[in-house]
Amino acid sequence: MIPRSKPQNAMDCPLVQYASGHTKFRNDRSARSWSGLVGFHAECGVVPAFDHACTAAGYARIDIRHTTGRDQAEIKQHWYLGEELSIWPVTGGPVAETVAGLLRRRTAAADAGIGVAWGNGERSRLAFRGWIQGLGLVQLGVRSRMTDYLLAALLRHTAVCDVADTVFRREVGFHELALPLGVAAEEVPFGTNGHTVAVWPLVARWPEPVTAEHVREARCSPALLDTILSFWPAVQAWAAGYGVRDNGA
Image (cartoon, rainbow, N blue to C red; front, side, top):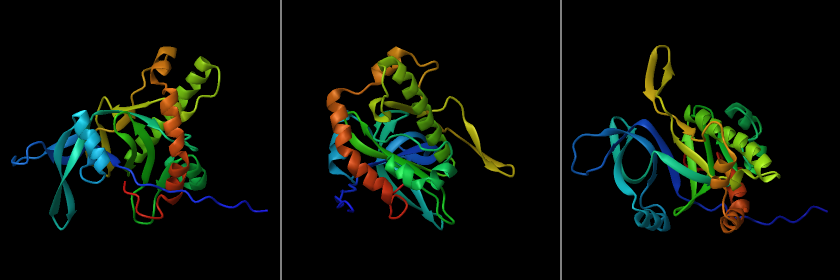
């Protein structure tokens, strides 16, 4: 007998993006000059509950200039979340060590709560959903070369979970430890054929070596664990549709 399916709601949530230095922003709406943005940000006015949470947490609003083609620009207001972001990833972790490997195992990646896409003529995209203390559930997504760096951060988190296994003497879930993301210590050249630009990639900010104290400090509370687990079916439903419909970054 084929078991009857239970429909899951692939709910929307705020999209957090990472700027590597080439996104243009300004703090003051009256300012004429724009600067390169480095760090995490999310658009204002999309999810009211998220706006309220950012206001309560004291995050600053900034203007970001988006290029829309034909030298035209669109200015949108965003929350600037800073250069460091601690997030409990609602995922089982990566099922491959490369983006190409994730694409070949897209169904397994979706089952693990990771969205990956790379259509014809498009840039690669990689995303997962996670919990940020004080802000709630968000979606973190990146494109193009930054997908390699986000995947590397997730793989680093996998290695830390291996350390946690020995500390807690059991298999520790990927979601049980907060993943500390941040800006790399040095700029990296992106580009080919002599045309390169310097960018600030994102990395996992786990120390080396990781100690028992580090993993204990990153471990989520029982109450938070219950909250994270409550999102799991919806996260898997979202990941299964990633790349099929418009899922943002």
